[in-house]
Image (cartoon, rainbow, N blue to C red; front, side, top):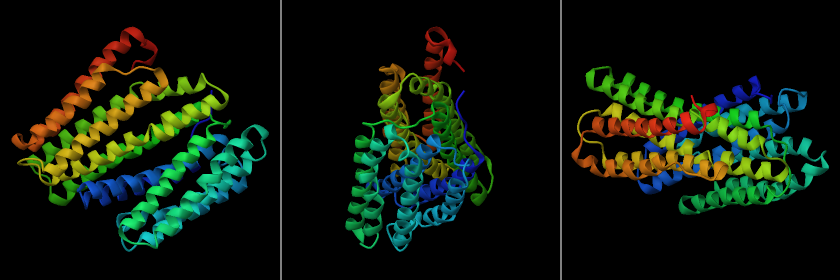
Length: 372
């Protein structure tokens, strides 16, 4: 049957709800390519930290022992401080971000190793992974004491070390519960979707409800709903079944590829759309700003492109309607200078809906067990 997420993990996720909101705030404040890139970098560092909790929680029940329970509860306020520091992480709160990041990440590795080192089959993989993964947060911490491009470069190196560590560590065996792993990542997608709704709702509250703002909220929510359907229609079960069908080192590699790496573009795509939705509700009339149009296109490329990569890795196939989506969506954004903002975002909802209708039609015939 598999093990499901615990109440402690759900409590921990509340910290990352704030982290996603803070990342969206960071990106919203600077829609240049450099600003969005910095936001994506912070998102990756935070995502990797959450992912570490998920790998640890799949191997051990975080509520089962007093040691793990106390450690997670003790890490929550530290992770909360890290989330608070995100909007100005490349400015005055960089040291706060770096210090809390290294603290949380190091202790999670300790918690994970507390169990992995007891198992001969898992010990080698953990050592190979940790030998680099333990250095990454230290690099982030040291980078926080520098300014400008040096800090950015150091944090990129920290993220790259995590990636290389994941490639090294996947050569061994990890304890992974397919049900738990799929459920945890689905819950994070819900967190990111929640940020879309919260961003638009707060913008509506700030500017006051009137006809155009109400219409913008409805259209923006329609996009969020079609994105929910696009992911949850069958992806969680498909990847869960694929994970359950593997064992040993193959299971670790598949979990790394479709979840830790494969789900990150989905999260980034949702955060990008949260920023666009916020700006749409704040200024529902007239044209969508050029910065918001390219961010909307990037949102689709990340979200749908991420789904394509997951499908390719798990199923060795790519749905042609998704290829069509990643072509049509940027074209719609390019034409945005001639269209009203509500028309562009409404058109995006229609494209998502059409894409998913084609997908669901195919599922009815070739994979009815996955149909929702």
